[in-house]
Amino acid sequence: MKRRTTRALSLSAIALSGALALAACGGDDKDDTDHATGGSPSASAPAAAPGASQGAFNDSDVMFAQMMIPHHEQAVDMAKVVLAKSADADVRRLATAIEAAQAPEIAQMKGWLAAWGKPAEAPGGMDHGSGGDGMMSDADMAKFRAATGAELDRQFLEMMIVHHDGAIAMAEEELAKGVHPEARELAEAIKSSQAAEVQEMRQLLAGRPGAAGGASAPATGGGGHH
Image (cartoon, rainbow, N blue to C red; front, side):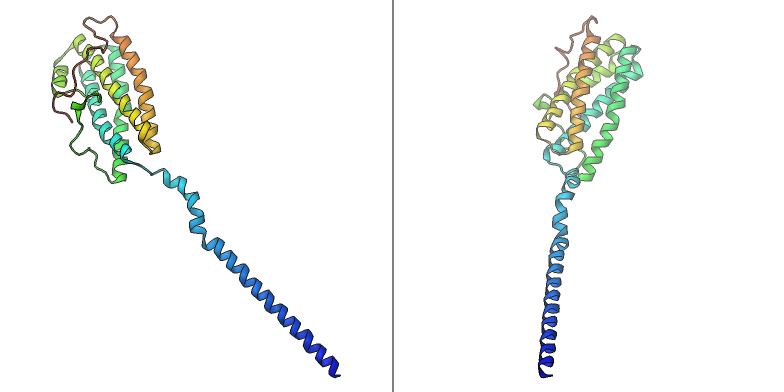
């Protein structure tokens, strides 16, 4: 009888020991789960990174938008002058395309700068005296606005070639240094579309009286600007 009691107690002790061991293992499993899920914020960070990178920008992106806005605004102004005064169907078609493309891009770039907490205009404005941006001076624009007929059309084509070349250079700078995906996408679009328009404008200039083909277009950077 005593042996049976002792044996029963031994079996109970073994069972209890096993239960305690299982409980301990269960606790370890919970800890492991907590580490996996508790670490989920850091674990999920890489997955969130691509989405976050869509909003990433640098100084080159900011400068691109701040400089391209007034550049586009001047192109739109020039296009409006042509649409108000020119009778040349080809020139009017080109001016219509320029206004239709660049006006929405101005709004897009202003939206970026607002989202980035940056001013829509670069401090000090554009430094046109440095050359290469293709912006017309106030004197250039006054002369253009005063022109009529074939002279207006010729000036528009010559000036816009220089203007587009400046925009292409700015777009290439963005593609070389910018990181914001949408800004880079716009820069690529500007580079491609405006290069095509430059070729078209050179063809339109060919054979026009007094046309310089953009080779000796108006000097830029000599006056006040946007």
